Image 1 (cartoon, rainbow, N blue to C red):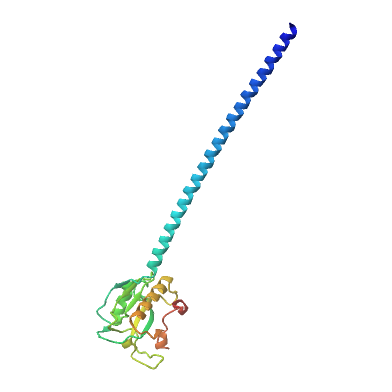
Image 2: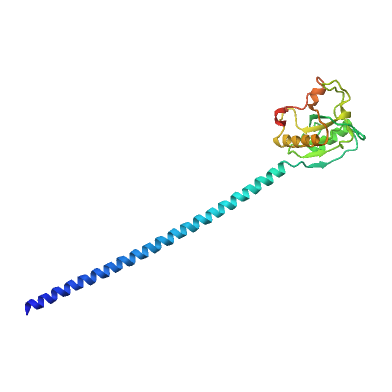
Length: 229
């Protein structure tokens, strides 16, 4: 009797241990499933975040590309503002243009040497004018129409021996002083302007004022001819 009772108790202990093991196993399985689900969610969230970042980066790249394209289009388009003067030129029709003369000037009479209005007023005082003026920001002003003969070269002589340079040339003034250098914007604008001339006329020479009036003129000052290439 006592043996049967002991066996029954032992059996109960074994069953309880088995039940406890099942509970532990179930809890472990549940924790494992929960952990796996959480890990899966984290992976999915990371993937979504990466996809969002990828989309944002692609949009930023597209926007930057558009900005660069707009910038490029702006920098390669010539814009000219008319400020036509009533002095410093002779009216003409059908003249042949084959030369571009580059000058330098600034307002030596006023307080601001880079004043466009000031330098134009100075031209008026001397009764002269270029066809074009390029300011420090690269803005191009037309003072005299191409068809007319502007008084910009003065007494001068071409390397090929021709005189009376005003008659067949276009004069371009660069706004600068003798101590300063031209800005990159000025060089860019000048290149566009020259390209425009070459598309309209048979340009055979692009020279500085000092090259057609040596000893009398020393401009364009501090000019880097390599930047026109």
